[in-house]
Length: 107
Image (cartoon, rainbow, N blue to C red; front, side, top):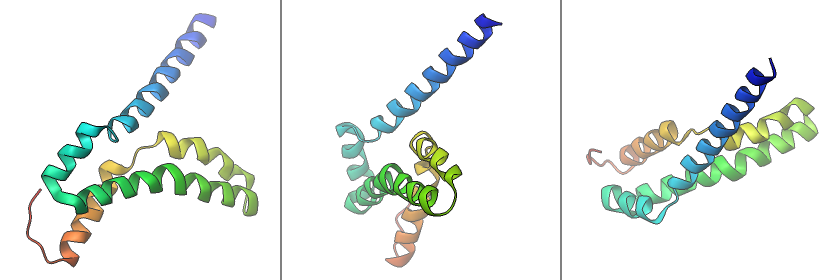
């Protein structure tokens, strides 16, 4: 029983560590350089902007919601740091940008 609990805690710790490392990989110098080469400055701005929204604005919004709406929103603050949505939002924002500028650049 204790062995199972320790194993679960270790796996949770490894998962959280992996998520943070994954987030930091997207802000590495090489990843940013590759983004500029592939999509230009607009893609880099979208990518870094979404990371800021995901890592700063979501927790602040959940903090405000926890204070003014219901305390259960406080629980979403660490979840917003662990949950990674850039795989979904960056392509959506990039597609919206391409549509707005009437571009036909494929990615």
